[in-house]
Length: 113
Image 1: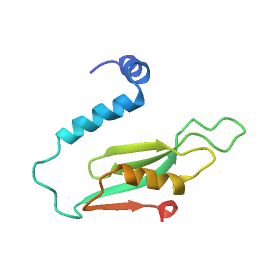
Image 2: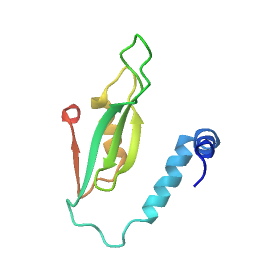
Image 3: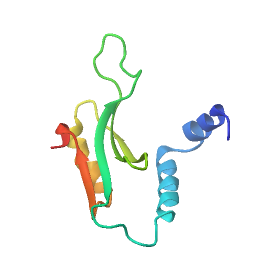
Image 4: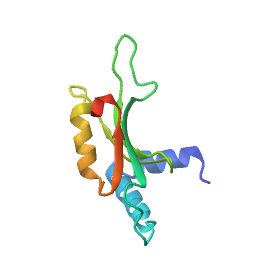
């Protein structure tokens, strides 16, 4: 495996987040099974978290992300930064609209209700 500093240079400087997301999406799309999964057999969870270490001293807000992930596989499908002037309620629909959720059980906490 490459050293941490190599991953940092490649993912942090050599590629834009959009390029990285596109390449990973293509990779995982190619890994889809040929047979469609049974309707309702896949669960996608929506949840928001503030990143550890991002709240400056004396302030109450840091970098907050909304994620859609597959809990059984441990795979994050998508993450979107929640704007400083908004909250998860306005960000969740953007995440949901960007994913193909046909036949999938999608869950969220009270902020997405």
